[in-house]
Amino acid sequence: MTPDDRLAALHARIAAAARIARRDPADITLVAVSKTHPIDAIRPLLAAGQRDFGENRVQEAAAKWPALREEYPDARLHLVGQLQSNKAAEAVTLADAIHSIDRPSLVAAVARAIDATGRQPQCFVQVNIGDEPQKGGCAVAGLPALLTEAQTAGLTVAGLMCVPPAAIEPAPYFALLAKIARDAGLTGLSMGMSDDVEQAVSLGATHVRVGSALFGARA
Image 1 (tube, one colour):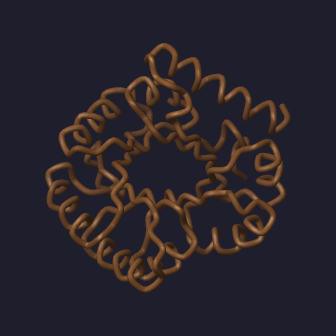
Image 2: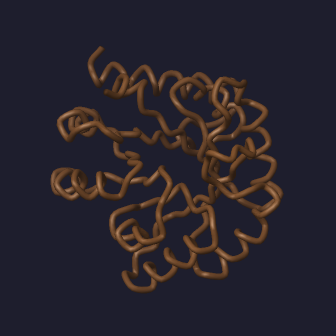
């Protein structure tokens, strides 16, 4: 399949799931996760009209996106991986959205960077929805305090993000994240990847983060 074919097939999946859920597909942002993929693999998707892309690491994003944005100034960069506090300033300079706010020290570092740069990326608070010790994300019990801290610090909190446990049906975790977001008065839900886009859309995802269905398996 060509990049155009893969992109069209994914949009068709999202649209079909949205129709079943009585949602407007236009309300769902497809974030093409381009981590580990070179510029030459990203350009065909940009040429096909894709504009939202996700990177895991600030250093990799900095190596690729300044050049790509010269060609496509309307491209939007999402940082979707764990973010170290000492990379916050560079992250705020580069990114239009940060999906992994998960602790007070990172809130403080991002707030300082916002003050220094005047840039205001959308922020999603990452929730450790499966209570997995090896994963990043705020514990569910600690979320109200972290949300208050983020909003007080001046972050634009767009919603919540999660990565459900692997090899388990993800729908209950997506439903739980949606409920937590509703209870907190948040509308943004960054959830769903290549294998579970339909479940995520059916349960309210506003941003789906898709890599392999667009780029193929990573090396």
